[in-house]
Length: 186
Image (cartoon, rainbow, N blue to C red; front, side, top):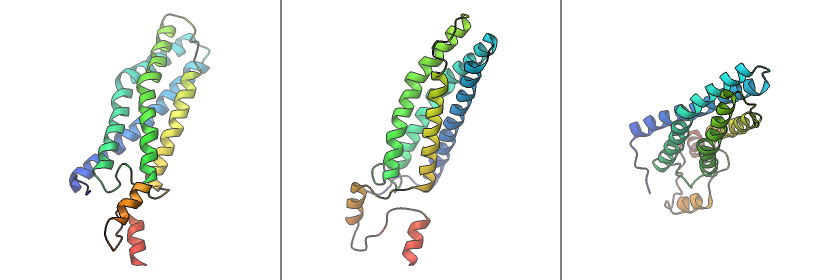
């Protein structure tokens, strides 16, 4: 199956995917900084401001950014030679992004909302460390996803090998990029 996105569409979608994915990483870094500020400050006013700021980010940005990253990545993979199940790094990205998006939308937002409500009511936030741990773990995941997007390690999946074997007698590579060019010149 050939990719069905035109070159301009692929490029535009790649830009969208990179922008929203890096935005998600940056948003998570901001949430981590605010979570640390809320948990480590000795001031109830600072904690309240930090958790209320986290709530604004959570209410307005987490859902659209995480879902845009997931959807743009899936569409991009399906419309390019990389495919969704041809290369192990793409499969890994998908299976890490899916629960990360779900956890961001469902669990992290609920924790942020609870902390903001407690801080606004003058109550101590019982799970303040959760608002440091969750963004820390998420940040590590997003950095890992970024690294494998750049490095593209691990090669073909079994499906990708079958597809390549069925590509004709020349065994032409379907993987784009400089490695394919360098190997074809050898």
